[in-house]
Length: 293
Ligand SMILES: NC(=O)c1ccc[n+]([C@@H]2O[C@H](COP(=O)([O-])OP(=O)(O)OC[C@H]3O[C@@H](n4cnc5c(N)ncnc54)[C@H](OP(=O)(O)O)[C@@H]3O)[C@@H](O)[C@H]2O)c1
Image 1 (spheres, rainbow, N blue to C red):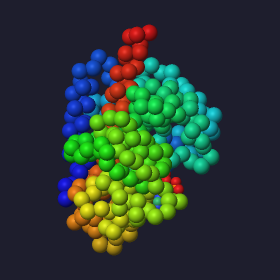
Image 2: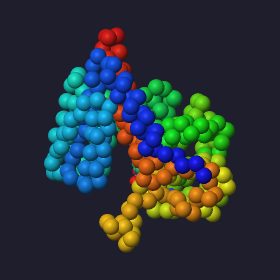
Image 3: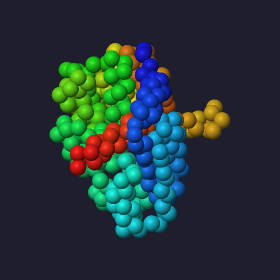
């Protein structure tokens, strides 16, 4: 089995981005807006800023209190949209329950939306137009490309239909393009005959958030498996008493599949690399738009 190593590719991409940033006349700047103190978000944000440091991308952390009002968050997003010194803005999710992320996102200039979640950018993705692609699907596609795994004409099954992973991943692989052109099936919690559908997959993308859900009897011999899941399970043998696993039973699948991403060290680390790429591209587009204005 070939291991689709996200760390190797991430490091390569970050080096490429840092040399591009070094040649730019304007240094790209990313702002991360966080509300409250979700511990998982703290870890994700730390990783994002670490990648900014490695690439030379400037970064700023705006940390709002847990009880911030929607109007204040909205106003902040609107003012960041207008600030010409800022090229990328990311609203760290999840937000506290009293806040509506869609409302805040609508106020963000779509050109600064480095997550690709603004409705205009999701529309561009649907229409096959250039724009920022959500980082996790972009990262997993980059891993397949790097490994030379073709998707054209293949049966590709996506488990999960979230707006941040499942749906955009399905759209990407449906695109008429070199690493698209797949026959895509999307499954969710109401799908029937899940095992049968998964068994058809030449490429299976699991993004459901259920620890080790995909077992060996659900995958075809020689299939390629991309595991997006990040789940913490109890493990008394680990010093922490727990460990991170994906949505697939890695050990069970490893003797059956031809290639698979590890968790951790697969798709998760690629997501941050794609964020840096989206920030760099957002900065380039804004420079070009200014020059053309
Ligand atoms: N690697 C990364 O960078 C990265 C980024 C984002 C997320 N993740 C991880 O990826 C996983 C999914 O994240 P998400 O944000 O997409 O999750 P989500 O918003 O909770 O969506 C989960 C999706 O899986 C479907 N689902 C749940 N249980 C199922 C089952 N038993 N059978 C079939 N479908 C089922 C749900 O169906 P319904 O729509 O019917 O509810 C939903 O569409 C999580 O483990 C998350 O931590 C990783």
